[in-house]
Length: 393
Image (cartoon, rainbow, N blue to C red; front, side):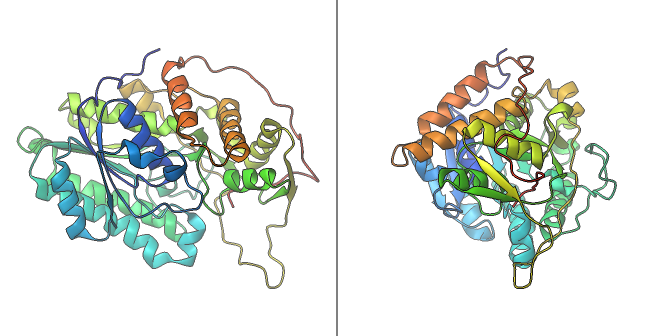
């Protein structure tokens, strides 16, 4: 089944913030494959190693800026030089635990950065599509048994989650105040926000995330220490939400339907939500000789403070299915196996470019049918020790 956006971005100018990050680097590569002229705006890569360098993303950019979204003057100048048809705002402080350690910077980047990108779009005075990327953690998750829909209340019990909820409020305020439905015909600026689940895939080396921490440990012959075994997350391969963003942007380019200018969830199918215990067991098996051990969620004397994390986060993506025709293409096991395969190739040949690995996954995703979701079942517990465990690190 052919993806609906395959021809939408050819010869389009796209301004992409956060292009040096995990999701942003994959998106830059995909946009280039689709024929877009991509301008990147971001600080340097957030980790070492990183997908931006290992996949040589700089080589696919029409232009790249080393810039901070908190610098509104530099941001406006870069956006004006790009003359974008599409703005994809991914730049963010993206880690829950870092939000606890540096809440001020988290709010500055995630909230003021969003203000600045929207203000810079205002100053352009030209039609464009704007996609603001936030997170499933933007929801008030006090009743954590429900699958969140786009109209659910926003909230956040930690700085990162609260900053993403605030970014959503900012986006809605700018849309209603400056880019309203009545102005679409004259201004032509169309603004939407998008929310996704826990994304996995090759090229993520962020600290305190379960997948990169696990695969670093496996590559070194060590067992990964995991916490909070019963925590449930909406795991999905990185290409799933990116395909959602591209689907939405393509529709917005082609239509003045004001209903598109709203918030959208792009999450996995309900059967692909899984505990961290299940994720780690599947990673162990996909790697081949991975091991893990459970650790207490209560730190011992002198240990790093244990920060609170939500027990369950679930998304409902029925709006995107019904109104955009978007569906996830790869199930949980396909996502885990492709992720492990990518890292295995990297660690076996760390000096080789990983661009071909990313492009192969993209090509396979493009040609996969949305209904080709197999029933592959991994034997649970492979490589496990003790009674299972873990959540994002």
